[in-house]
Structure formats: C-alpha cells, structure tokens
Image 1 (cartoon, rainbow, N blue to C red):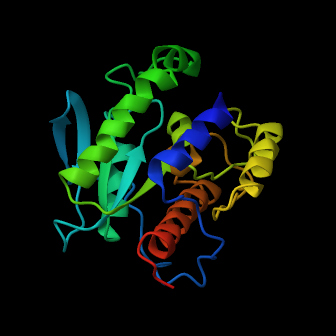
Image 2 (image 1 turned 180 degrees about the vertical axis):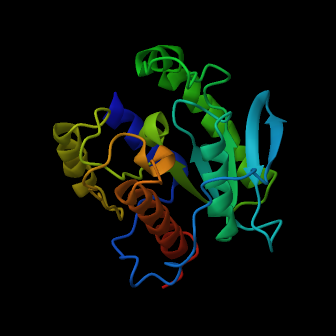
Length: 235
C-alpha cells in the first residue's frame, strides 16, 4: 500500500521531488531561519469544497513554481504546519496545503492513533482531492512546475523521503524496499537518515533541543535546495 501510493505520486507530479545531498554549509540559504512560532501569514480558502491553506512568496504573487504541502495527521489546524508552509513560501514558492483529511484529522489532545486516519482516508478518497488541488494550482494559480512536501501520512503521497532513524511509520525494511524501487526509476532521488529524532521531526520537532532543532531546520534547507535545483533549475 505504501509503495503503491508513492509510485502514484511520481506519476501525478511529473517532477519528482526529493531532498538534496547538499550540506547546509555549502547551501546558499543556510542562514535562512525556519519560523517556529508566531502567526501564519497565508489565507484559508475553500476550493472544490475542500479547505486549503495558501501562502505566497513576499515578492511574487503569481510564481510559476509551487509546492503542494501535505500536513501530518494533525492537519491544517496545527500552527506548525502553516508556519512551515510560510517558511517555504518565503523562499520564492507558492505553497498550497489542502485539507486532504476533509476534517477528519487527529486531535493533538488525544492519544496518538494513526490507524483511524488510515481507515478514514484511504488513497481512493485522498487521490481525488490531491488531483483537484494540483489542477487548481496549474489552471487557476498559473503554476507550471509543482513540487511536493509531505509529512507523516502526507509523505506517502509525494516522492520525497526524509527517513529518520526511528520512524515507526516507515521502518528500515520498508525504506530499503523503497530504495530498490527508486533505483529502477529514471528519476533523481535521495534518502536522508537523521539520528536521534522520531516520527514527525521535520514538522513537530522539539526545537528547544539541539538535535530536534537541527533536524527540522536541516530538513527544511534540504527541501528548499531540492526545489531550487529541480523546479527552478538553479545550480
């Protein structure tokens, strides 16, 4: 199920999105900070009956490169998702985050139970939402190249992995199987392994701890570097 969905994402986007091997020390945006606190600056908008969070780059209201941003299982209500989308937008991308759970996201105040989300949001429900969102980005917002950034459950729908060391949602044997499959495809890809972090680190890391803050910010820098190279052709 996981690998099938990942391969669907490859076909849907056309432009494969993955993180770069470039280190932060060589990356031209290494000093750009990720917003961890504050108020989101984007807008909520209903498109095709689905709520979306849309955030623009500060100097370009009609960019031709965009990022489909897929949240973790806690959905759009969580501030950290919208703030990270804003951080990507500041790097020059139009970012669109659909509520692909259609209101059935998990409550942060209840025990973690992703099984309910999986049951309520199988691919046959999620795929049409994402397809319409991509269509909206291309036809209405004028985006010519679409990249994708997915976190937690959203990761299965984009061809980008930041495979942390202790991810119970993407175990080592699954990661190795995914590596084998990507190795047969004529597309750029990379798997990055982070030590000492758990599932959700790229979105919900404890930034008061050095290892969590580093992992979240490095994942952000790698994603932006990847988008710059493969969406904007910057080298």
